[in-house]
Length: 92
Ligand SMILES: [Zn+2]
Image (cartoon, rainbow, N blue to C red; front, side, top):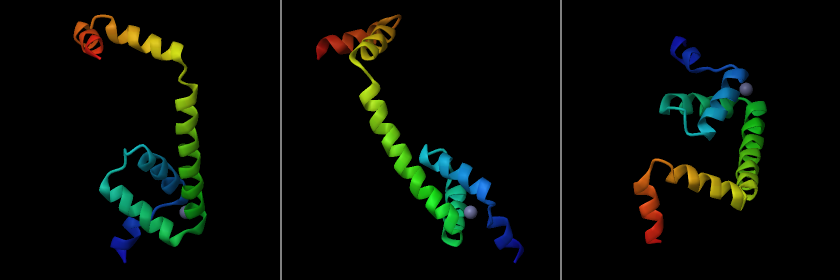
C-alpha cells in the first residue's frame, strides 16, 4: 500500500492544490491526487465547491471593476515602447 500512501494528500495540501488547479498551475499528477483526495474527503469536496464559486464570483467582480480609465491606462502602457501594438489598434 506504499504507492497509495504516496498518492494521499493532507487536507492542507489538497486545499493548496485546489487553488493551483483553479489557476491552471497544477500538473496532471497533482490534479489526479487532488481528485482522489476529494473523492475520499468530504471536507475538501465542499472546500473545492466553495472555491470554484468564489473564484467565479471574483472573475465577475474583476470584469466589473475594470473601469474605462483602467483600460485607458492599460492601452497607454501598451503603446509605450510598443509601436506594433499601437498600429494594431489603429486598424480596428
Ligand atoms: Zn481533505
